[in-house]
Amino acid sequence: MNRLLFSVLVFPLATASAAAEGVAPYAYKLTEPTWFFGIPITNSMLTGWVVSLALILLVRRMVGKPTLVPGKGQAVVESIVGGLKDLLEPIVGKHAMKGAFPFLLALFTFIMIHNWSGMLPGVGSFGYYDDAGTLLYWVRPANADLNMTLGLALVAMMAWLYYCLRYAGPRMFLFELFGNKADRKETPFVIYLLLIPIFLAVGVIEMVSIAFRPLSLSFRLYGNIFGGENLLDSMTHLFAFVLPIPFYFFEVMVGVVQAFIFTVLVAIYIGLVCNHGDDEAHAH
Image (cartoon, rainbow, N blue to C red; front, side):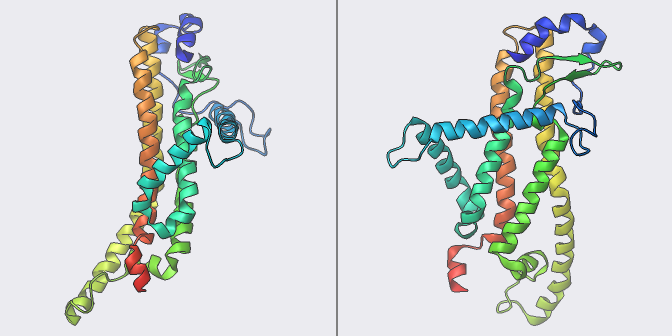
């Protein structure tokens, strides 16, 4: 309904050429940079704060005081938590799962809710066209802003480094990057020595890959959510009623899938270093 309202109330005032420009790929500054510790408040930041606060209050309301026999709200939350735990535990490993799961759960929930925030009434509903004909919304989805997705990716990579060092240790962390993975008992000594520079080179390549992980995580999420925002906007401009409805259902699915992909990738990064199997851990 949010873009339907915009189409009916605002779009008739705009020209057809301006409508063709699409939604702005950047956030709209609501305040001057000097207002909030030198940082401007944007429309994406405002949406992120409001939706995050609403999510916290909703979960607190649904769960209340946890009981042995859960109510409806607590049962819904527990089913989401239990389902995600069963999916991620084989990836992360039981040892690291104890500390990493709360972060992964929060990451998945946060991203999914903010992916859906673009379909809330009032989000992406009202705005104006600038001199270049670009549509600027006063309120827009948080994950349709590259600053938000890049921030999420950087936080995820800092958490990855923390969990790897905590549960695998610096020695294992460095071994996973640069260590010789060949079995010394089954590999001839000369071949084992020749493999050392090869694994060192592989470690350097892996470091380059790690450096690009924040970019891949952030651009993937941003591209899908911003693309969905433009898709809904275009369909609404074509025909305000009925036609956009299937695309709203499609964006609901995309929101879940993108949140799951982001979370699973972070879990895989942690598991590659920390998950070596319980039998190996007991053997050591």
